[in-house]
Length: 100
Image 1 (cartoon, rainbow, N blue to C red):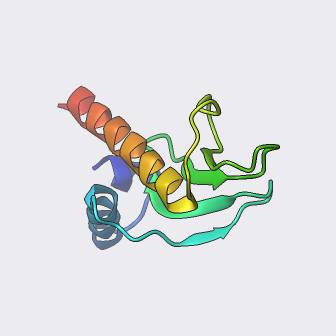
Image 2 (cartoon, rainbow, N blue to C red):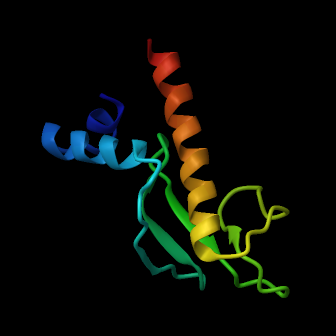
């Protein structure tokens, strides 16, 4: 329901999006982000924010690009994307619990 009301999409798209968000074995797709990192396909937060990871830092380590998590680094883009996926899942769970 949150996805449906947030995006104004169809029930089918909302269901597909919810399934993708909840899949712990998701294989991520990436597209270039305007600030030199990568959007992470399929990672969305209840706020509407999307997943973004980057190694566009002096040490070239991968990080979740948005938010205040820049002190946590990852060895690969996939590891950073999986961590952001877990954070998004946590926020969706919190939103679901607040709506109940």
